Length: 117
Image (cartoon, rainbow, N blue to C red; front, side, top):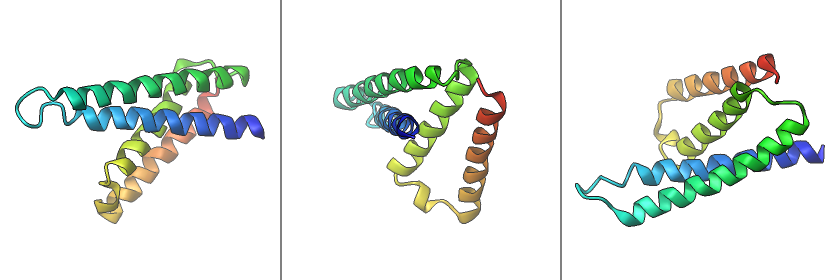
C-alpha cells in the first residue's frame, strides 16, 4: 500500500511541475516580447516534473508497468488535471465540460488498466 501512495504522490508532483511549466510557457510571449522570467519558471516547472516522472517510472517499472503508452497515460492524466486546476479555469467551465473532462480521465484510466504494462 505504501508503494501505491508513493506512486500517486510522485505522479501528482509530476503533474504539478509540468502544469506549472505549461502555464508559464503560455505566458512567455503574451506581451509581444520574450519574458525571461516566465521562461525560467516554465523550465523549472518542467525540470521538476521530469524528475518526479522518472522517480514515478522507477516505481511503475517495479510493478511491471513498462509500456511507454501506459506510462504516458499516467503522466498525461496528472498533467492535464494539474493544468486545469492550477490555471483556475476548471471552476469556470460549464458543468457539461467538466463532465466531458471526467469522462476523458475515466477513459485514460480505462486504457491504463487495459494496456497494463
